[in-house]
Image 1 (spheres, rainbow, N blue to C red):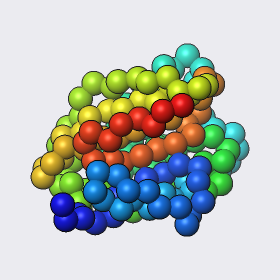
Image 2: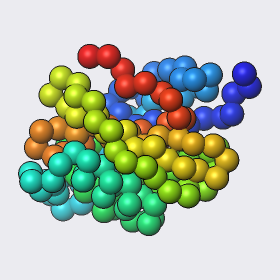
Image 3: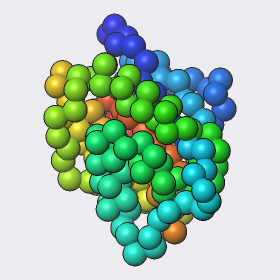
Image 4: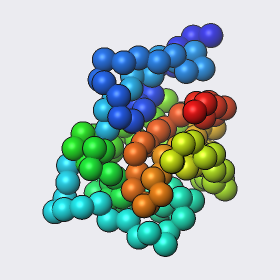
Amino acid sequence: MAAMGLIHVFEKRPLSALRLVAGVTVPIIAASTVAFGGAPVAVAADTPDQIALATLDDIVAGDYVAASAPFDPTMQKKLSAKALGQAWSAFQQLQGPYQSHGDPEDTPRNDLVVVNVPLQMDRQPGQFRLSVHPDGTVSGLYFLKEGVPVPAN
């Protein structure tokens, strides 16, 4: 299988870490946005699904500052809104422009809820994945090829 290119994946890991996902080399980039005036903005009453869909809607709309608002402090320190936009652009270059998304699916992992949202892209399907703390802050954001499983505990 020929590698399609790089898909940016954001999580709290060293920049030098590499992972092979579905035949595509995926750089794991330490992620988050610069803090924009204080603590993460997350409403405790929001469900992980609501947070994931709102974040995805902000990304699709090009509002990367709003998309990064629920990031936890570690994420806020490491991923700028600009870098998030660049990653989304790179993902669309590989998978094709965004068309629509499906219903979120939740997977509990330790104290997190991992939310997968299927993406319909122009060339091939993909996934948007968000890891959400119980307080509603985000600890990981991923743009993935379709079918990438949630890692085990």
